[in-house]
Image (cartoon, rainbow, N blue to C red; front, side, top):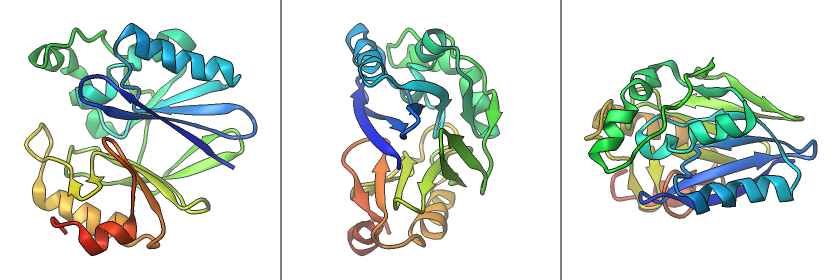
Length: 211
């Protein structure tokens, strides 16, 4: 049984998720922690719950979602996973961060390339990988068919969709990803977005003005 904890980090209000199960192994998804207090909050949760981080997973590698990658790597010496098409964003993230006023500690490279229909495993649990480009070339989502939730990154939001004016963005590709990969899931699947509140497949199918 996967437990999910959400944190909201940095000036961009990124949703960082820690997913754990009964083995205490956990994934850290989109570590956006930037300030000293944010880093402490993340560490305190892990330590207080006696969790064992085993992997960093990035839904994509825009700067706001990887601000804590170096910190998590240095704290736990664990590998990171993302789609191969995100490597170019990691390569330029220090310079991109400067544009937004962030001094970004160079993040580790991608140790594991995630592919469509692949799996991310931890403890006794696993998540399905869906390649959902459009917000960025290598955007991925993590889907649990058993517990009916999906971590969608910046692809789909409550009442909105991901922006497409950043590097790797393409509006038509994004809409196709949402309609063919996410809205085809069961209606009661909970969508955990990269920013803002959660929603459901049914709610976005019925009311999202972009869809």
